[in-house]
Image (tube, rainbow, N blue to C red):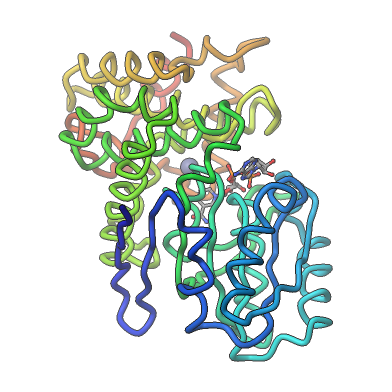
Length: 364
Ligand SMILES: NC(=O)c1ccc[n+]([C@@H]2O[C@H](COP(=O)([O-])OP(=O)(O)OC[C@H]3O[C@@H](n4cnc5c(N)ncnc54)[C@H](O)[C@@H]3O)[C@@H](O)[C@H]2O)c1
Ligand SMILES: [Zn+2]
């Protein structure tokens, strides 16, 4: 089976194709957007595993691939790599109406999308996400960015892809820890806006993480549908789109406090952040306290951390975490914008959360 999800953005609308064998069929899906030659930006790990499948699928449509292969890892989202990537793309003589393909996780997608957005004032690009996180989150919605010394994702722009092709079969080669980290973002969708989906995940998420392909396809497609809806309502995050940051104010602070290292992957920080957001909601009296426990139980059952104490090594102090939260770009006029919830599936934004309550929670 294969699912098509539309991101409705007027003339910038595009389709997300979700299927277990989408990569092998990508050539036909990409052909309407491509000329005879397309640069495919990817990283070394993904290139070794999956570039050939994409290249031969394109070759079958008479399209030749120019591979641009970068180092894997977050460090690649830098000005230096952006400059080199732009040079490589210009050398490959991309024209204004050409297509650039991003084949990889969120790092490749964010960097390539940004390069496509600024090269010749904007070139078409396609997302072919290869991590669960990229399939359910970063490849959809048009946010692109690189990191600077001042922080993550601080330089970038909105540039929507022309098409997203999510091959869920490709996730079989993803390290299990990366798969679980991406799954935290899937749980986020249930927690923020769909209690039925959350209940489905409680029943089926474990099997999906074990590789049940029908269930993986369902959860990717459903997550994409939810993100597509929110992005269609609020492309530039002036309102509803902020709900997608559920768990992220805490998560980013935890990532920063652990040095963006192997100690804590982004999705793992989000997992802990989700539980903290629901616990904060309970402390503030807006959500039943049982919901935080329910989310924590599901995350732990899936092998994800659910409390600050689950992070290996020394516990990050509350003051350090608070300092990182104030620094986060989601801080507005010195006050923290939090995504809270009235219960599972009922997130909302609040900008009047007393710092003391947050500090207490971080110390517990
Ligand atoms: N633009 C957005 O809206 C948005 C949203 C969320 C996250 N992000 C960004 O996404 C990035 C994280 O993305 P990520 O988690 O995909 O990390 P990533 O791109 O670094 O990929 C993780 C690792 O998995 C490897 N890999 C990728 N696909 C594989 C596969 N199929 N099999 C085996 N290995 C594979 C990669 O080489 C890498 O080593 C961050 O930079 C974050 O800021 C962006
Ligand atoms: Zn995230």
